[in-house]
Image (cartoon, rainbow, N blue to C red; front, side, top):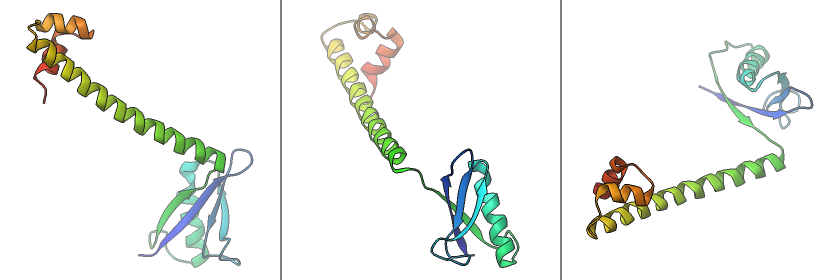
Length: 132
């Protein structure tokens, strides 16, 4: 089954500009249409392709790609990197809490005291002491 790509980019105002590369008078630019919401991009593109090619709407696939302004893409990439680092830091922090709990237990502290030191419940302290 053939797959067409619908490239959607925010247009001025509250519209999404859609183009289907490979179709239309200028195949490089693509066949244009628009949608009010991002959720409408795929159905609008599918309808346009079906009408343009005179084929049933279920005879092909549509893949939607979103093109955002460069500055927005940069913000999103930075946010993804920060999220990745935060997840890594959280994993490392959890390992340090487990190590601290085990060491405190090895030094003879009760699970209740370990919980108080780590500012967690005694049940959580028990989990930390016995976790892998």
